[in-house]
Length: 455
Image 1 (cartoon, one colour):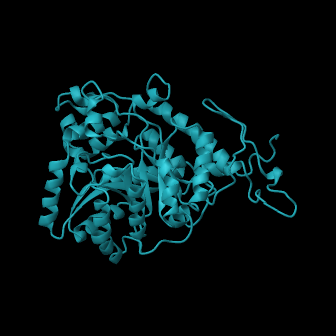
Image 2 (cartoon, rainbow, N blue to C red; image 1 turned 60 degrees about the horizontal axis):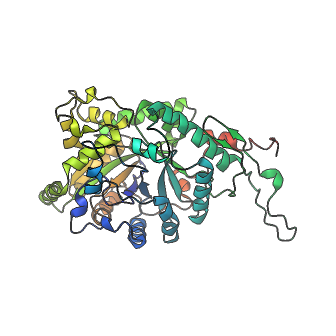
Image 3 (cartoon, rainbow, N blue to C red; image 1 turned 30 degrees about the vertical axis):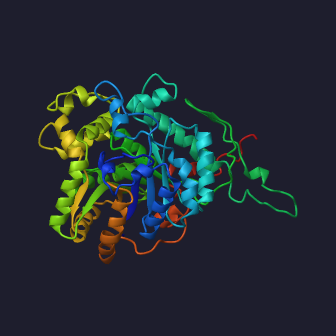
């Protein structure tokens, strides 16, 4: 039998994340994002429903201007204010036992030495349940917030990411050998000096001596997520990621993307099944098809199309507020996210898509409307296309997840499409059956690599 789908709750420590305007619904509590209780209760709800992850998106800057300035983002709450999700992780870990906690962190926002230390600490605190979503930051404002003149070119950002992950791999996998932490009260020896190493990294962006200040956690390296469907982004995922977040417009396009990325994974010397794929979808659930479509129409009344355009345009890296709606996407050049343009061309395969298409399609992208049985039918199609998991996008918190848990998951479990119980162990063990990265992963080359270096 095919494996059950994995489920991740796609959230952000903000009010308006993806379905902009839905926060205005009376039952929407994402305006409570400043409250730690809000997130703890959601995490407990997700664990009770046997979700695999709570997946926090994040940004470290505004998207690019809309109609000449950034007023639109503040007016509509488009990911501002936005709080740091990393700060929530230890609290969520203390109130859950099995739920994975995936944190988005950009190569831009933290030095790799400090980031590696925080992640190792969290992996200890959660007993091995941390995941990292690797991103490169795609807005000019984010880069200016960290002292740069503007965004680095798309391919150069991934070259930078290659060095960033190289540093953290050295710290997580190579700085401490197995058995280095002794803590022998009789002899007074706390750790074996010969098994703890400086990494002495020298690269284009970083100089890191080491050693890693945290002894190895259960996973050593967190579960590695990555998003991005550009050719360079997919090659980066093929080398490094264990889970890739995708937003394909339909199962056929997902199948093509997955098969090609798994081909790249094999070329990188890894087992193609060591990279899994999570499709982003949202759900409108009704006891009847008529009720589901009525609820979808009510959601459409709340959604703000102009904010959808501002968000999508910011991701692409250009102000679409001044473009005519019938402007072909092919006329737009950008150093921002290439995956958004690829998605749009996949969604409109028979002609050159326009700005109007972006506005109309993004507001309903990845939306599945129907009864629990109809939704289960659709999710079976995605699984048959090679998708391993679903990143569940919310319209309201906690309502979107409560409805999915109460009405859809029981049907999915009956069909073998969702797990009934958690497997034991760390986040990686639950997904792949082992705590540590396999030997074929590039991080594994640093195991024992620093034992002969000068101290």
